[in-house]
Length: 255
Ligand code: HXC
Image (cartoon, rainbow, N blue to C red):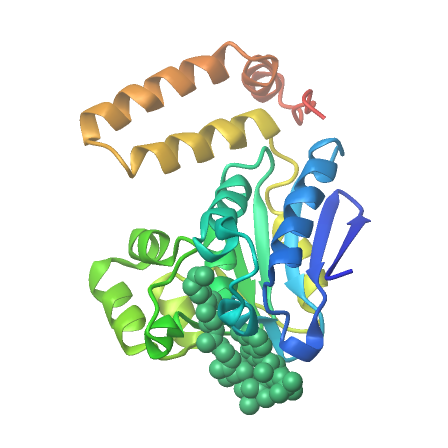
């Protein structure tokens, strides 16, 4: 198998498992991630974590050897599979955390960009080196990177194809945290900072932010008003204020 899917506490963990190719995303791996998402959707977990097998790479990108192979399906060459799987991760019911150990290049960087959060060790290195192959990034990098770090920084990264080390990634907002020790343990510790919250509220907030950045302020405010109203009418949205007034912890109702 090109990935491992495991369950740890409240978390589903997808580990890219092709260390001999630095966990490059071949067609089978993208399909396996897609199938793993089907499985995880039926689990009661509170976050989805991604990492790479071995200590050298999170993921070195699309499998370059397959880019030469014209027998593989058009949906892979034409980037549609990668884009659709990564968009699925971005809007997945539970938040996702990329636990970045080493290289996150090309499609590997794009996988991390699609996650809600990115934590990484000091060995984390991001980059979109496709330009050096004469290619345009194809799994969302040209769109998600400028939304995260701004157009100027994104153009610098995409057009030079250079690597961004962990400290710079933290400074420009590509990494949320630099972590120490076992990257999955550290990612789970980071995720515990939000897994006690209402899953519904978090889902609505992510929806408001992601839809809002693609629209005008006025339209974004309308989206926020609609989603905020849904939260106020939800059981969690009634329980939270009740618990505050009663000076007790809220019971989380949406498990
Ligand atoms: C296939 C890869 C790979 C990749 C590494 N390998 N990256 N195989 N696809 N993306 C393989 C190498 O061929 C090698 O196999 C083994 O992994 C170890 O890699 P080395 O290069 O020997 O390691 P090192 O010298 O330490 O260099 C690490 C590296 C380098 C800097 C990460 O491997 C590298 O530059 N990789 C390519 C990164 C890249 O360009 N990614 C973007 C891909 S295009 P052997 O068998 O020789 O041991 C993309 C989108 C395409 O993502 C557009 C949409 C379809």
